[in-house]
Image (cartoon, rainbow, N blue to C red; front, side, top):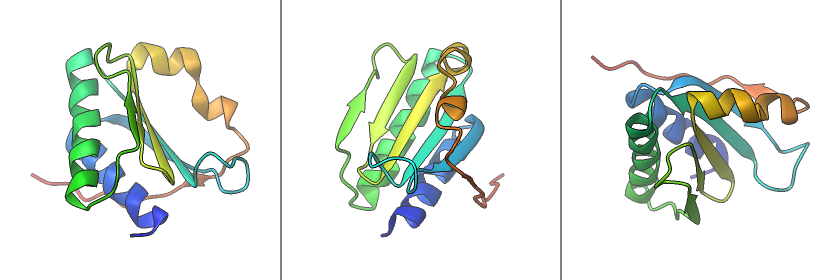
Length: 118
């Protein structure tokens, strides 16, 4: 699975857990950290944990190694490192504070098609 497919998979996992304002940044030209950053937020700690857990479960189901999962217990900013894709799952209050979209403003936004279930 390439990194574009991987970011599509985790974006869908986020959407399935009703994550807010899911955006994907193409980091290829601006950082050596990862190919993509996925950024989203949840309304409360329980939802933030559910989103991060869904990312982890979907990745493992596809045999993608979860290299790191940080911040799960506090559920204010959970980082899920999948290597080429790094997911930032914020509590809505922290997302506005850290504003990664502005910090990495040179990175182009990637448009993803998310299927709606229900």
